[in-house]
Image (cartoon, rainbow, N blue to C red; front, side, top):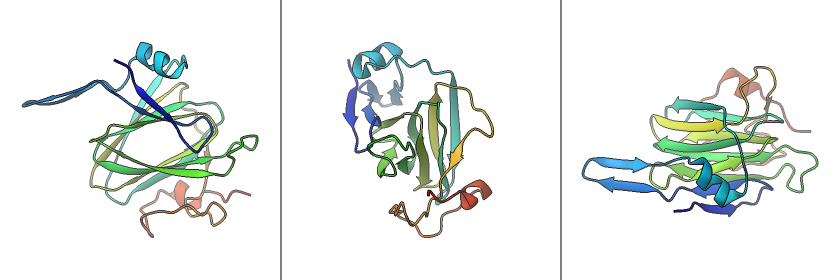
Length: 175
């Protein structure tokens, strides 16, 4: 069984739908990553070295964060999130473009995010579980943070006053 892979409006970003899902009277079994199937579907041989989870309550906005060397594979395992990605790579044909995605535990869609892309998720429900794999280890101080409300990016959010960390509230405007 293969994966469904779709291109997006942002250069290099892909939506991946896992096709191995089993449901019965006990619940659900979902395979979220298989290296062989991933390579066959994407042609990319990525060695993921770190898995992370963030758990957020409704209206928490995490991001827009990124760095210049990490590829991420993200999904929502529980609940629903409004994910927004922003291309922050000056050499990219989609530089400063953004795209939003609904990620939830019904569709189990994943986003493959290359380096240089700002990644965020807004919790649409109480207690969402956001899972991501990375191909580099986290290095504090080596990330960029874009302002969620940067008027030049003009991102449409489905909320006016999200709950933010100090880092995300400070951010920086893209110039």
